[in-house]
Image (tube, rainbow, N blue to C red; front, side, top):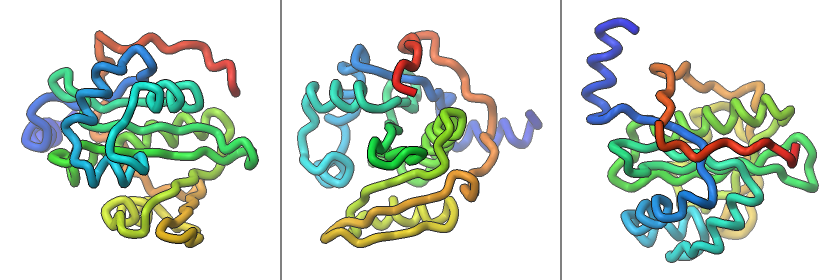
Length: 188
């Protein structure tokens, strides 16, 4: 990595951003992350303002999940799980802590999930998002051409994985020494 790139990264993130797989055992970190989010943010991502442990356990069972951490604290979460009625389609969920918006964390998390989805043979990302969630819609539209279908106050957004315009990772993702061990993938 060039010195200029290191300097740019050090001004963008006080601590190195780490992305790692996560699961049910990380509930205390996920709970702390959600306590730090606004009710509006929680409602946009989860459809309600309180995330319960059973919500996390269900998501972890149905999807692969990754967290972005800085200084040991979760600052972002992405999930990617198969849409059972549509082979080759992966449902994507993303949440970044409010004070960490517009720093590229969501893009890096989507990149992680998209890379895994491609490896697993998927070709489409599906995102169900509130129409009023302009930041998420702007991010999705920046990533490539979208197909959008209105569903009441929401949009179903689809992106072809082959057309995603994801930037190259600014540096290799550092593995967190406290990472949740990755279990064999029995569902794919």
